[in-house]
Image 1 (cartoon, one colour):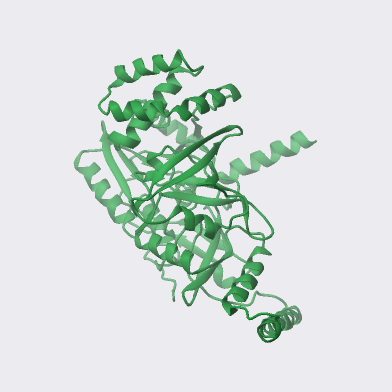
Image 2 (tube, helix red, strand yellow):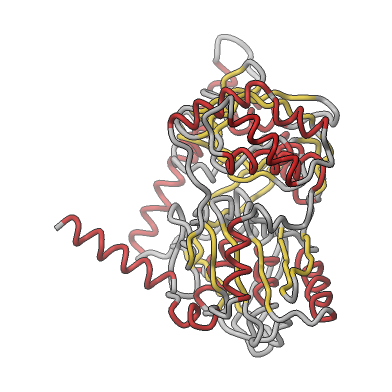
Amino acid sequence: MSWQKNRPQGGSPRVPSLALWTGATLIIGIVFVLASAPPAQAQNVTRNAQWYSSNLQHVFDYIQRHYVEEVDPKTVFEGAINGMFNALGDPYSSFLPESEMQDMNETTQGNFGGVGLYITAGDLQGDGTMKYVEVAAPMEDTPGWRAGINPLDRIIKIGDESTDGLTMNEVLARLRGQPGQPVTVLLRRGETLEFPVTIVREIIEVPTTKYAMIGDTGYLKLLTFTPMTAERARDALNFFKTNNYKSLILDLRNNYGGLLQSAVDICDLFLDSGMVVSTRSRIASENAVFGAHSPALVPATIPVVVLINRGSASASEIVAGALKDRSRAYLVGERSYGKGSVQKVYALGSTGFKLTTARYYTPSNVNIDKIGIPPDREVKYPDFTENDAGELNRLLQTNRIAKYVEDNPNAGALDIAGFAQTLRREYSLDVDVLRRLIRNEQIRKVIAPVYDLEYDIQLQEAVNILRNGSYPGLMRASKTLKTLQEEAAQEEFAQAS
């Protein structure tokens, strides 16, 4: 695997595509370089590294020759290499056995048998196992999405097996499998709500975009960042142009990432020049600047609103952060996930490993890892109270909403409202919450529209901002991520004082 930097005309240095993947990880090649350090210190580091490496080989050979029973070298090797990565305490750095390398290849190639969930390790333990698995985002139009699984849901069990004590590799092996075969997971939502969901595996073909017109506003939803995303986005923008669009909504909600170069290419559609994102490391060769270059396909006269939520991560945050810091877009929704580290993936035969080598920074010099990007206008769906959680748990256990949608696939707004009133008499839940639950189930199982303006309050707010003409003033009043970060630090200091 090799790569090089090119300098686009009129722009900053940029790294071309190779497989720059930024989902649960951000892949940007593989190079091993000794860290910059004073000569004496570097020599000491080298000597220490050589000593440890030599002794690892010695212990490995000794075990092979003298252990009381014959042992498979593969078992000893994988145990040792897993121990090295577990010692880092970094959930994004890990050994990739053959099955996971295959999963990664299938994902980047665009299809595999699975449930369509981006997951991350929850509370990584010293031995590399997890106490739980957290859903970062469901992939739209997949079994996991249609089953109603949400970002931040925790997978407590897979079948009858607890995820407490499993490695990420073991979890992936249990979730993926033969298309058409079901798998049941026990989910925990919030603090108390737990319910089972049965998902039938499918061939997961990674989608890229959805788009449509909302009046004179172009609506573009990016589902993930693949080699085809920028091209499909250009198709959408050309469609908007033929329909004389006056404004644009870029929806990055539940988009958990993809190719870094794809994210840069998307920013290229909106920016004529300047920085999109930079990567920094203690290793000089890992430091890079990715820039936009002209011409931008979206004219500067077209106002842009970007939708984000807690399922927007990595490459999505690169785009949202760049457009926000460059004052090219106004952000609406919820704080994003917060994935700002860079990993490299290297193949070891049919296995491999990924290692965090750098962090990325937005144009205003902010690393959003574990922080996320706050929206300019926060619009959140109501949180459930403890009583709501109990009632919702009781309702979900009955499967009544799914059964209603199955029996009434063409139910209209009045039908949904009537059924919501029926449920309200049995469960202490707000009617609007019940209507949204029914509608969401209908969208996942029957309709799958490009957008749902009637029930999507975040989209409603974006449309209202653009239609009411409040966008220019809001843009002038918006703040960069750096300013927001500094204000938060000042507020924290003042509270501590």
